[in-house]
Length: 135
Image (cartoon, rainbow, N blue to C red; front, side):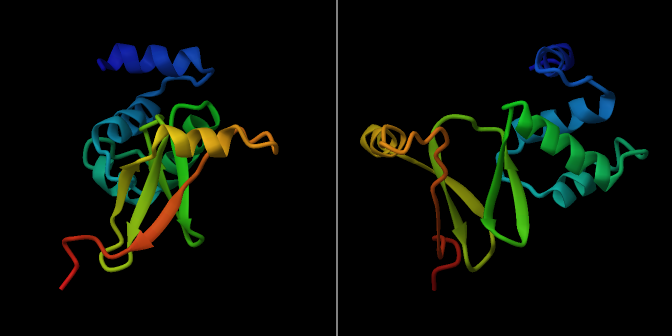
């Protein structure tokens, strides 16, 4: 997306498209690594010296609330963010801490979202050791 398209998307969801907010959203769309707010802050600081960790965190919260990204809480002590909005699960490596997407079958999604409990969100998390960390 161009900067203008990013700005238009934010504006359409009720978010004022400041330079910093556009930068955070663009970072999430380009880096599918499920970063933390601190990771984004460190990555964006050189190009945006007035950026604060609080701004990154508040922007991520606003993007999540607006339905543009997901907040991932595999680990209770850490929030990560994901711009992939399609149905999928998340795997966290207990060795290196990386978070990876994995597909969910249509049957799994249907089973969980069509439950009699009226589920409106689906979050599937799992942990283990990724191929890079296996001995």
